[in-house]
Image 1: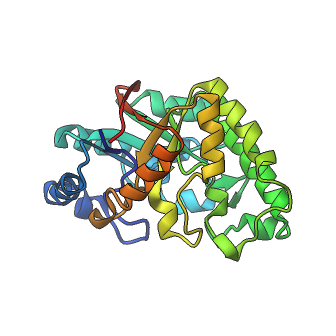
Image 2: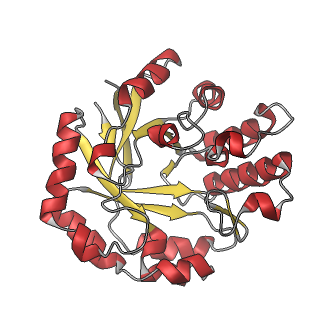
Amino acid sequence: MLTDYHVHLRPDEGGTPPERYFTDANVERYRDAASAAGIAELGISEHIHRFAQALEIWRHPFWVEQAVDDLDAYCDFLAGAGLGIGIEADYVAGAEERIEAVLAARPFDYVIGAVHFVGDAAVDQDRWDVWEAEGHDPDRVWERYFSQLAAAATSGLFDVLAHPDLVKVWGPGRPGPDRDPRAYWEPAVEAIAAAGVAVEVSTAGLRKPAGEIYPAAGFAALCVEAGVPFTLSSDAHVPAEVGYAYPEAIELMAGLGIDRIATFSGRERALEPLG
């Protein structure tokens, strides 16, 4: 079984209205790409900040700029298209009840949690760069990021944690911490295991300056030891990225002894053989 649940029907940049991308023709392009990659289950998980209802959760300036689409229309479209109904929802500390209210009101098959922001600063955007906010101190940035990831797991809001070491996204452009990274990974993995949430193996990191899969092999090995389940995704934003570099991801997972992946329906998880 191969899956790709972390898929976007449109690019992230502006000028991508839903009526251009939430169409039967575009869905078929993604289905064709998934079929070519041997993917049995395809799901869509657009960023929550693209939807007006996200402003019920948080009113960060970036969200205010982006939150224009209707979340219910999106869910209806995916249901009609026969695709897995997902969402990539940011964890916002202090907004847990508001996040739950927005999520619980929709028929999601799965909810992918992500940490893109630490406070008001962004891990993967230059406009609100957390590195500048933290004085370009990698130990401080990593400490804050992985503390937020642990809190996201503990919140119980999410079925999967996306690109769990996204903090490395800039690769050599943002140096790693002086400390052994396990000092940051281990508390996060402990929280993830206790919460029973799955961790995403994402090939998107291979398309970023990081140049490696999310999560790092050492992080994934700690998850395996803790009994954490895994999903497999590409974080595609165009059809050509569906199933991107899956042979490399499968090789990594097999080398760590991961032989099953999580599947979802109606927010219920099952485990299927990987392959």
